[in-house]
Image 1 (cartoon, rainbow, N blue to C red):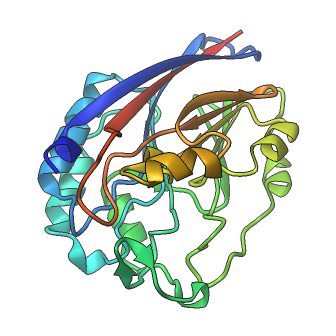
Image 2: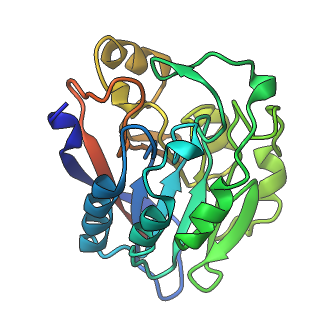
Amino acid sequence: SIHARVMTTNEYTIDVNKHVDGIDELNVVLVADLHLGYSIGCKDMEKMVKTINEMNPDIVIYAGDIFDNDYDALDNPDRLSQIIRGVNARYGSYAVFGNHDVTETLVGGFSTASMTKAFRDDRMQPFLESAGINVMLDDVTQIADGKINLIGRLDGEKAGDGTKNRKALSELLKECDMNKPVIVINHEPDKLHETAALGVDVLLSGHTHAGQFFPLTITQPLAWENYWGVKKIDNMYSVVTSGVGLYGPAIRVGTNSEVMKINIQFK
C-alpha cells in the first residue's frame, strides 16, 4: 500500500521516419488510469502534476480511466480540477475515456453490470475541460501548428453511451495527412498489427496497470501483445504506461505507479 503511492518515471526515445518542418523531437508525457475517486485524490494529483511539469512536456496525454466509475467519489472536484489545471505543456493536454469512465458498481475493482448500462456521467467531460484538458471522442486534430496528426478514440469496450459503438480507425485516418506523423490515443492496447497496417506511427495506451498485483502480473503479459512499455510493431510503436492510479485493492506488488515520458524523434 505504501509502495503504491510512490510515483516513478520512465523515459523512452523512439524514431518516426517522417520529416516535420521545424520540429526534430516531440516530448510527450503519457499518463493513464488515474482512477480518481475512492483511492486517488488531491495529494496524488499534486505529485503527478509536479512530476509532469518537471519533464517540460510539449504535450500531455491522458490515455483513459481517469475516473474510478463513480464521479461522486471524488474527494473535492473543484480542488482536483484546479490542481490538474496546473499542468504546463506547449501544445496542451488531450484525453480519451476508458472503460472505467462510466458509472457502474464494482466488486473488487471489476464491473458487475451489463455493458448496456455503462453510461458516462455528464459531469466527467466538463470536469476535464475545466482542468484544461481537451477531450477527444473519436476526434482528429492537428497539433504543433498543424504538423502532427492526433487521433483520440472512444473506448472499444464501453463507449459511454451503453454501447461499443465507435468510428473505425480507417474512417478517422481519412481526416489525416498521412505524410505527417500520426499519433493515436486508445485506452486499450489492442489490435496492434491492424493499427500498424493502417499507417499509424505511435499508439499511446494504458489500461493494463502492468498487472498491478499478483496474479495479474502473470496474466497481463499473456493477454496483451504489449502489456507495458514500448514495443515496435512493424513500423509503429505501441507505448503502454502502467498508470498513475489504482483499481480494486489500493496496492501494487511488483509494479510501479508511473508517469511516462516519450521523446519522439522525427527523421
